[in-house]
Image 1 (cartoon, rainbow, N blue to C red):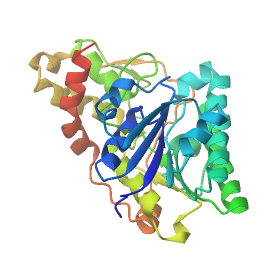
Image 2: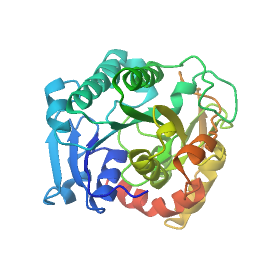
Image 3: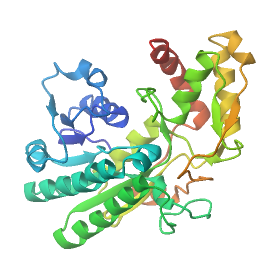
Length: 328
């Protein structure tokens, strides 16, 4: 179902996923309010929207309840993407991760409840599966968390369950699996795997694989994530609410195979990249070893039907990554 003619609050709207949601939903005649503190989001991601009369940017922080109340005013639906991501960052600084991802999340729930907003869609995470060995990952079966980040994202699900039960809100959590695509941050120590590998290849440096390279991920293209958010925001299936869903393609990619695919695609831009070989480093603390999602529940309850496999997504996004990373 298409989300249109609504007032939509997108928290973290200047970030990678949030700014892509802003673009899509603004083009569908919605009024968009974007709340972001620009800690990890970037003003440049939304610069092209600032003169649009249906777009409002609020520089604010979800750790501040007043900012949350201001942002939710008059909204029909909330798409809550704001969070401090990254497993390694949470291991180095669990306190800030907790403040933003748990206290900030609770502030958003309180503000939405007070404003009388029913539908609240939030970014959950595949990190919630923790040390579970089961494949594919099924929503009901999780393990013990492996990082402070994973703890915070699980607590979000627990709070959502309680607010749904006690206050009649319709909360839908989307457990994202390794999202990639245009506007993905390629900067710094906490950059995601795909832009990191691409940047190494472009610099003729060996991409570093943590471990032996046989670990797997269910990489999810940004357009699939946009679709899931829109379906969650518009579903009229009451049984679909107050649930969590895997958002992925449902395909396992071995990391070393990803490296080879990236090298092949990038060699079309620069043939010298063909000669760059990856190197292996130590395994990373808190990393999940194998990841593959079952997306049956999202298909059944939400009508989710992902359009892009990892190969289709990379082929679509590689030019964006190339141009973006050339600026560095």
